[in-house]
Image (cartoon, rainbow, N blue to C red; front, side, top):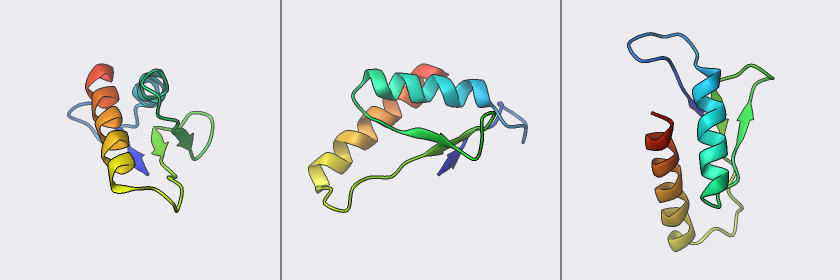
Length: 70
């Protein structure tokens, strides 16, 4: 997974994680939050049959979601 922290700190940022999950979903990528209700960890679990093109598309959507969340 990917853990998000507040800028300049080691403090977890569950609000940013929720924003990334929603932005990714809006872009067509389904990811989740792992580790409990108030977590800042993004859970990414692609299928075993993932193609290179699909991986690149998913990575681009995730990058856009991370940028959109700030």
